[in-house]
Length: 387
Image (cartoon, rainbow, N blue to C red; front, side, top):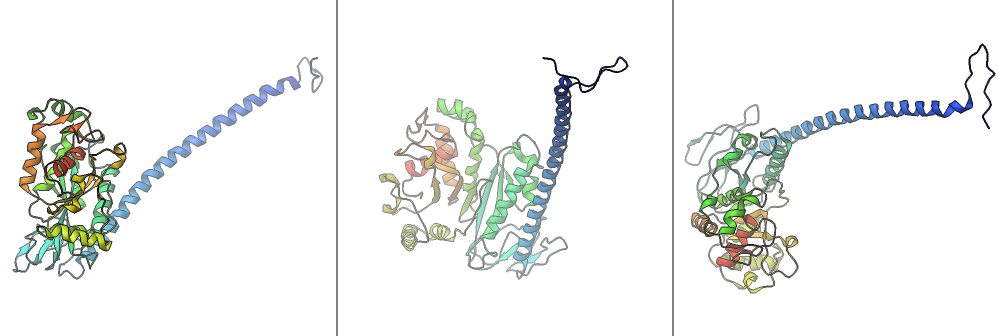
């Protein structure tokens, strides 16, 4: 039955009826919803602006922290600081002057001599400088050096390295030199690395893809991995022969503790490296994994330790004999001969589809690049020298 009116008709005009109530409620709810969405939109815009402000503040805090650490490094080193906290000139052991590069970095001398300039402070006798290298292959989608990903990652990594090295750790026997290996495609976005204290070195791709003999590798190496054939610029860390030890890290890496025990093994010399490694493993200073296969049982070998790396077991099926390495971490003994041997191996291109280098070292991410060629080199050509 039709619902009764709220009031009787007067003057020919109809009054509001109960039947019209749902229409008014729908209109009211619609207007309320529109207003709510509008407020949410404005809140999201404010949130975006706030995120940008936080990012800028975060970067500023990192810069402040880096400057604080740098001031601590300079304190007691005999070097003067200008108003910005940048190191001025300092006299070496022989009384010579070294000119800063604009961020307190000096070119390093022979590690066996005293009074070495490294990272803006005077390194005393008995302290060896380790080269910490990173690689930059491209500028990403932004195409410039203003993105927080590059600058924040590089800043945090630099701070973590300095925090576990001499002089931040007074008991450490190793200081750090920061080096960035920059591909020409990334030269325009390497400025922030220099501002953070990295010495930038522009390097080309060490291998021309068209010169690779192996057909499969020649046709596919530039299409796989993080950055194709350009990832091979990491191998230039082997050319840093003015340093006794070099460490190559990715920019998303973080160093939490000093690696002095590993550096000690690298510098022990000759077969003494394995003897010292066994002592450190037995003493608990080093935790090393012994692989289940003969060529990976490095502890049984008397060969010198030339590299430390981590196996990427998450990338292979359980029980696989030949395991790749994680591409973001490698401690190595610089050698131009080793670098040349790597290049020759890549040029030969002995890589089989779905099987890997020599039909063994493959089947995982980055197998055609760094993650595969490193274990192929140390396990296949120089067994027992990579740990």
